[in-house]
Image 1 (cartoon, rainbow, N blue to C red):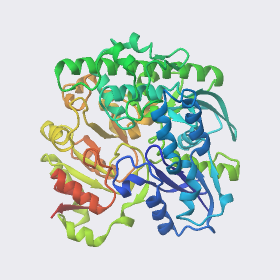
Image 2: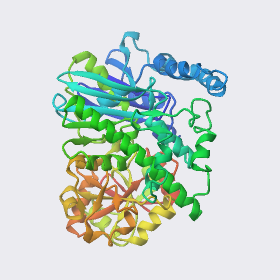
Image 3: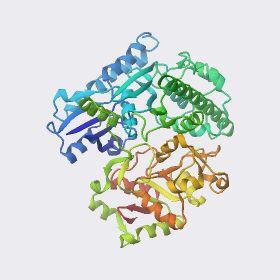
Image 4: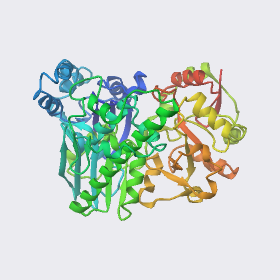
Length: 561
């Protein structure tokens, strides 16, 4: 019997399929529609699972949505209706979207799949975050608490949970509009970046600044009582602008040209100040959670969990506990949490566990052999020569596209769907980052390394080391390597190093290790602003547009025709 979890309508829509306690398959809707951040009902992903796993009413035990739709809609509506004239624009838009939103989840589902109504259930937003995140830890009955922090879900902006044997207890919540996530998104908007997409750019930019606006921003977000000053927010009034003119009066003009040196300094200082607010607020939540639960393992999830700089900084202040962040802590990963909620409702046990971030479709199952022959030609004639040929290409300064095994679940490519090159080749690293990927100048690329080599090159922070498997926390090179690898580190010396323990890319790294290439550069296999590639058509189009010649796929190297 199968359990299905679905996340949709707000951030990246996704679908998860589990059987007993195992993840069978996970899909993001954007992979199939090619619309970045697609938040529509995931009909393409659901149809893919129905077709490939022959799903119907007889073999589906439960289908669970990741939150409670009416509660989610009403919580925002009831807040905004208190001042209907001031919030008129937002209210009109909120009402217009009623028929397209999650309230009609059952209808949208039944348009695709004929399923008994009693098999359709609903989890709660932050509980879905918590269940997904906890699935990476084998023992969920001992020393485990969860902090979930995001923008908003069902009117809740943060939650603290405690796992007690086979029960999950909600201990504390914060209510809308007092949201740490929305505060950070508001600063993202102020700096001219895209809300719900470019928060990572604010995090990167913060490394170049000093928190000179910290005291001013404390007027906006009070970290002691976790409250937003409504004077400075506008997201409850407008659908286009999340901050008011009062924020402009407080910290200056928004939407400036960040490439101008003077503006860059100002904006990096604002980013550093917002980052410090985030870090201090998370630290206070950790202190509170430790006090009320006395747990030694604390998960941080929700969209704010993607801020690996904050996770790393806060962990330094809490060496007495292990801090864990899953590979996809935002709403997308919550589809898996929703599926596990369906299982939990049935079994009343928290015995689900998985350790790998590679849970997407297997590439061999979706490769069209005609596309492979039409788009590519084989470089090597023998599988035995593949790794040696890749070594020669990488050693000579080439960039290799990888299309291996199963898709990664999170927003960061982890080797199966990546562009890779030699970390020591500064010219190639520059070309990949600045010419091909067109990343901002304040965003260096990330290295990947075998676990056995991590201690040689990097300083290990033990209480967050597990998160390095999916770049969920930062680290630093040891002093001796600072100059050698300066081009791939942030200005503050930190970097998102990936420790490779899973996936097909591990075989390549083991081979390159023998050839004295210890560290590769890894970035996602996609053009900027596009979703990561899914099928061979995407692979071909992206390689053509980025002028990438070589593809590592199913034990062979291909050259694009």
